[in-house]
Length: 74
Image (cartoon, rainbow, N blue to C red; front, top):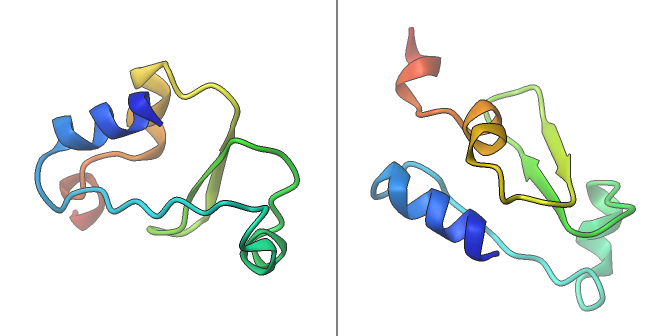
């Protein structure tokens, strides 16, 4: 979570929106998105949905999955 939060803060205000789901409490959401392992990061938009499982400490991986919005507006 610390790596993901640091990444989000470096992207600027409002660029990346995060929702943390505790699958032990919100099992319906885990089932809806077919989360079978934790931690799982889901990028819902822009489509297609992308998943990262496990370690989020590599900023290059996060940048490739969560690029700045300007890259999607062209």
